[in-house]
Amino acid sequence: MFTGLELSPRSPEANRPGRSVSVIGVRSSYRDRSGASLQALTGVSLHANHGELLAVVGPSGCGKTTLLELICGLQSPDAGTIECAPAALMPQRDLLLPWLSALDNAALALRIAHRPRAEARARAAGLFAELGLEGFEQAHPHELSGGMRQRVAFLRTLLSGKPVLCLDEPFGALDAITRTEMQGWLGRALEREPRTVVLVTHDVEEAVVLADRVAVLSARPGRVRADLEVDLPRPRSRTDPELIALREQALIALGLGAPCSA
Amino acid sequence: MLLVIGLLGAWEVYVDSSSTSSSILPAPHSIAEALWGNAGLLGHNLAITAEEVGLGILLALALGFVLAVLIHVSPLLRRAFYPLAVGSQAVPIAVIAPLLVLSWGFGLLPKLVVIVLICFFPVLVTTVDGLAGVDADQLKLLRTLDASRWQSFRFAELPAALPAAISGARIAVTVGVIGAYIAESQTASIGAYAGLGREINSDIYALQTPRAYAAAVVLFAFAIVCFYTLALAERRLAPWANRP
Ligand SMILES: Nc1ncnc2c1ncn2[C@@H]1O[C@H](COP(=O)(O)OP(=O)(O)O)[C@@H](O)[C@H]1O
Ligand SMILES: [Mg+2]
Image (cartoon, rainbow over all chains, first blue to last red; front, side, top):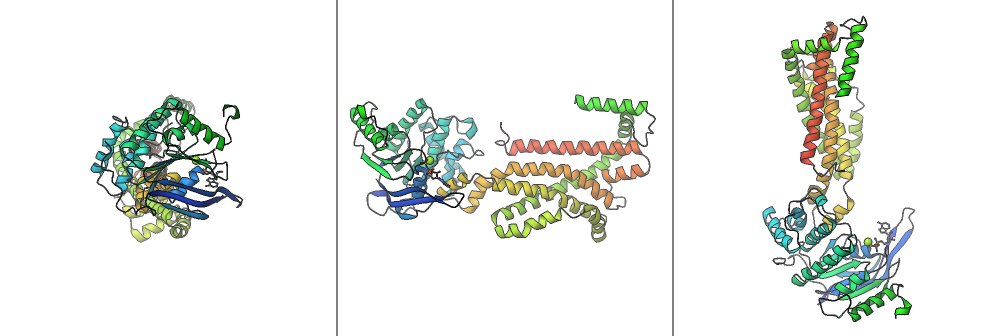
């Protein structure tokens, strides 16, 4: 079971009751090598309530990673405000540390929080079985499959104890079968251990299957094209007509809708 | 291995067939005889050289590593130390070695100074590069997990730099052996601290050329053993590095 993952005592409550993440009118840009400014996001407003899963979909390069880094406080916006409970990032590359075992990678946040090594390992080990990682505790990252690495990276994010999880295309690099499996365990893991999640993906179906709300971003500079409520019971079926209709709506917002099927 | 045997064979044939005197170019068999006949003396000198190199390398590792960390964490210290470290490599060792003896006498100390001076530099440079080569995204990730500066160092930068530091140490042992030779031949010694370098030099003056070559062979073997010991250490300490 997912137990003992209380919120870290340092975390201040999200500013507005019921709301874990609010992004209001945010603009963000990078400087390229010639010094010219490159707009990544413009006028983006989004929010996620406590315990909600907000999916953010958009074409590659539209600023999804930038948005997560803003939410996690790794960057600050050029304009607009971000109010957010403490957030942990699961980066697009899993970034497991090659010199640590799978178990120690998963327990990294606890070690950083000065928990004794044995306690940190015990807590991570308890979750290994949950995620089908049993027997791989001592394996090093290069000995794990892509799906396993993602699960270890997810555990590391979860064990940070932060109320908000930012997942950056967690299943983007996986094959279709593994991805579907992973989506299943992510849903179950969050059912047991509710968190507010911002899930970035470029897979519209993944978004509507997993999320409570789906924000669709335009191509760069990213702006919110659509903000869709997914008010369907879980577990969801990919063939549910309502779900297919939502998926179609999201695709249309992306400019990819098939007009004849409407 | 075959290459070595082939070369030795060619050398033997060349020396035997030409009229070269064994005091100018000894044949492999006479070197082997010298090696066998002087095993005790060579062993004694090897022990001395090994002590110098071993201690020197350890000190050089410590110095190179500490300097590298200081240079890595502080731009100010980088500006202060890096030019000095580079400058230290331009110092002609052969010139200062006798001066070191003047100030520190005939003991181990001046030789250690020479070896450390030569050896810390490769460790310093490779470690600085290794520390700077850490994956910036790993540091970013550690920041999201609220890691302190020290924790980022301990969990990411230090292990990332370890293979590079060990490579530096491998360069250091090979130049350290040369350093020991220079130190021994440049710092006049009275009895106690001889070493293989001194042995080679005095044998050459005394036209004991086969023994000089035998001493060189011992030095050569010692360098190879040191080098592969460190390669082994790297595999133990940094098993994640050097994977295909
Ligand atoms: N460090 C950076 N320097 C300059 N431009 C960047 C940097 N990071 C991202 N960008 C640019 O900003 C845009 C958005 O990037 P990103 O947020 O990574 O997009 P996404 O995650 O949606 O693919 C892209 O066009 C990218 O080229
Ligand atoms: Mg991205």
